[in-house]
Length: 299
Image 1 (cartoon, rainbow, N blue to C red):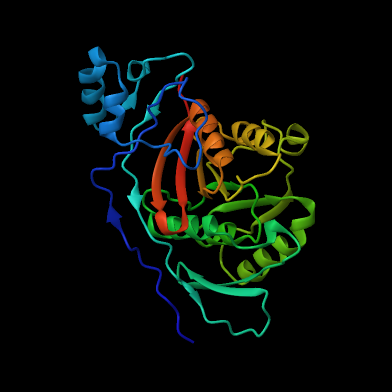
Image 2 (image 1 turned 180 degrees about the vertical axis):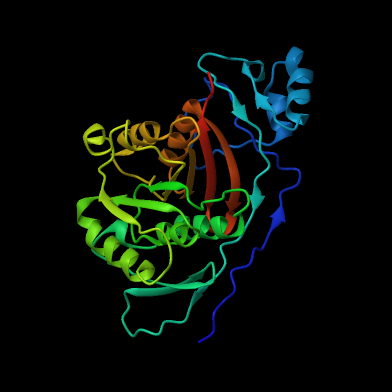
């Protein structure tokens, strides 16, 4: 059976140093309005007398856009400048050995992973964000070393990302809604039971509900919080954000990969940037996927 080797197709973005530098009065971000103006546009948006200061800030290695970068500074929080890597989601799934339509075969970190999907739930389908994050974790193990780290995935869906994190040596807790857990548990058990890895855990987690009872702060602390394609046009975005805030403690790294489809996706990203130190690590233009890293701000 042929297996596609999971190698990067990497192109560094040049001349496209995207930033979040916009006026708080600029209105709602929409899919039609590019939310990440490049460096030149960011400097043009600065007040004339502050343009030179903004340009110097953005030329530094660890730069932030300060309140000087807007003619209206009310509510504007600092955002990191970034130069995301431009990537392509590789076709690293392999031809099906099963005749059933609901099984997909992938290969990550040298292991074949068989995922059973279900058309009954949105959460039981492999979405492009999961492929993007799995690929990135495999190819950036030095930057994000998951070995012996405590990892929580929210909205784990089919479990693909959690399985990859397990293979990379993490203590994984995969969570989702009750109706998704049976398929999630099946996929994780099937793909990890014969491996010499930390035994993963599957648990119910409804965003924003019973978190203190089910995951008391005194007991549960995670090194990484993973999320893929959890943001789309649904009514649970505020509880989702509250859940991210709840589990992101000092030292926790949130890695969120999402296919950006709607204006609500960009609105959620803006809210995230208002709370966390946020950097876009990579973009997958063909799939409209962005991979975002967020950490708690230091006081």
